[in-house]
Image (cartoon, rainbow, N blue to C red):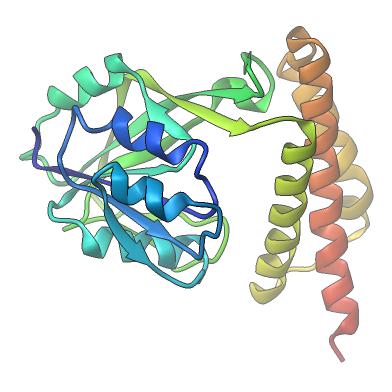
Length: 252
């Protein structure tokens, strides 16, 4: 076992959280799950899997992830969501990391699925995020959505072999529901940041989003799923700026 903690945030993920916990237990015996009010049996699955449970009201992505980091035993943190599972190659790569370099962060590549289909192109096809870092020098900002790691000067970025397999959406209905919720949160976040939605943002950005993902990023090679993902992503863009415009119009 490595002196590494895995931090997971979740809500109502009873059908997958157990598999996610088990996928990282070859890496560490310190798995911390922050649950934000699950009602579907998730809590029982977490406890049966032997993870440390932290109960929390939903405060946003950044604060919730930081709460999990604070409960971890080790400074090195692998931060994942309930539907994200590292493969064996990535586990092996993590075992090779020089843990004495606390100013390094590690970019992890993702393979994302819509239902059972692996999406190879479009925006999902090149997905990668910094998810392995040392909490003594790095932490999440406090943004409720679009959270980011605060990287101090001198931080070095490295990419590990292997993948996080992201079982993102069960089907198109699940994808649409999640993207709608995220779009509304994003619009509210932009409003709180003082941004405005001009004509171009509201009417041209959704179309550009579709063509970028479906044509320029070759989403059409994923067939029907590639088309649907591009459409829902364009809808997300439209709804995000519509919500921002709505909130700005309500402001005296």
